[in-house]
Length: 418
Image 1 (cartoon, one colour):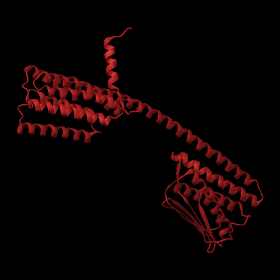
Image 2 (cartoon, helix red, strand yellow):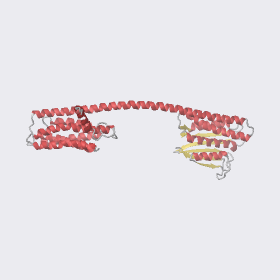
Image 3 (cartoon, rainbow, N blue to C red):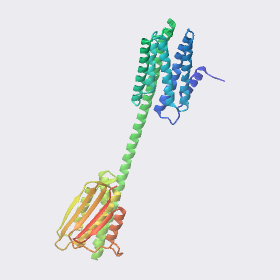
Image 4 (cartoon, rainbow, N blue to C red):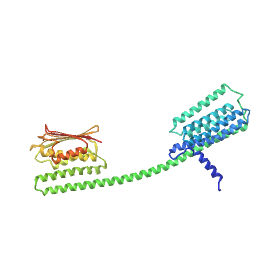
């Protein structure tokens, strides 16, 4: 069996340090669990050394107490392995503070025992890295300062010389060595982890930048494709509208001419939506004010008779509407304006008012003329194509519409914005 000693020790160390780390743990949680296990392992040796020294003195029972309590650091590994990180942290801090308070009480903060406070503070900083655990770090450090400060005051006020062990120079040197070595090891380990995190963070930043660049390129290609689709759709609808107009010019029947012109205007209304979409670059929503004002002008130029003086008062709020709702809204407007121009005005003309308001999450469309009005009964099944289309489009918008024909014709439609 080929077993290399160094690899075996490293494997055993990695096994202990990674106790409690799972694949589902976040990187920061995994780092804190590994840090806790690492600290428990590095603190055991100096505490055991002090305990062994105390056992060889006349006050051996205090050394035995230290030996028993410092071995409780192994419980940190046990609780971490079961996922109880908070309990493991509490045990770690209690064991360290108890043993250091006991050591300092036995030696009255002399002979370098107080130096172990520095690696203790470094350990607390290791467990509660900034900035996420700022409050926990502050609470822990303040707690340690209070505990050891009270211990110092009690020793000064009530010196118990019977418990004081007269240390040897070797013990003092060991304290200096262990306190310094612990501080260096913990700080170096912390810096190594920070460096590894920075490297991992830099790698993630590079990957995110590459993904962002790829997404931007994909989005650009998508926008180009959508723009081309809307452009071609608009062109195809424009061709259909032109064909209807050409056909109208070759028809002598006036009724058929009117039907072809109405169909051409409906197709043009739909084509205008696709034109606005690819012109603005927003392929989901359209500015209703801009779109419908242009539509009204196109209708004025195509279907308004030259010999009639028809005044149009247009008042449209500026807000965005999805193309799925803008097209039905435009077709309804087209039908109502066409009906008013055909039936509402006599030879002298009249007034046509168009209002579209955004009220909270509702859209109100109001079209009014001062014509003679007409009889509208939704229960009749002999409605014209225009009225049938209006009802179908209003249902598509999930809206509610009403006709009032007492003083001219007033049409109101309300539907939800979203």
